[in-house]
Length: 205
Ligand SMILES: [Zn+2]
Image (cartoon, rainbow, N blue to C red; front, side, top):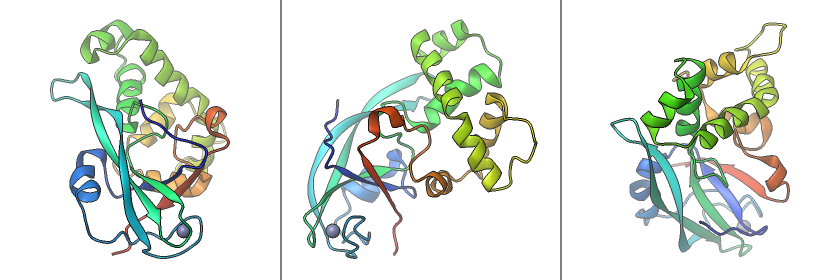
């Protein structure tokens, strides 16, 4: 659905969500103040085309909808590298956004809804729901490490999926801070992306 290569570098803009992406990034023609993750030059970016990917949102009625999102690329005038700017609620290489993954896990693990009920409520497939539950399970070690680093989780026992999810759903949870802890966004599937490089940036102005 969207094209990347091993030379694509990503800047994840944690201050912008996909709902605001068009207004705050795509249609924004001021200079981008990022520091180039490759060469270190500051605010030397030019717009360099766009590409389309799909992302999921929760509709008001609670089902999951797919919508296209046009992603902006920037080119560094100092080193000619090209960077995609991603909103903070995207999981790179996945169509399902971070809030939707957390929502699906919440329905099953915290609200104790049945799989069948969640399928009919969200219009997701059973496979999708199991995939997201597995994604949380596979990420538990990294999540636990992060929660211990920031002293949110201090018990001696290993964290459960439900406990981890409860922390991740806190309104104060900072996913940029998780990124800084591990050097990659939460729920990124490292098996497929070992050769990709991710860079974090925040708007300086
Ligand atoms: Zn550069």
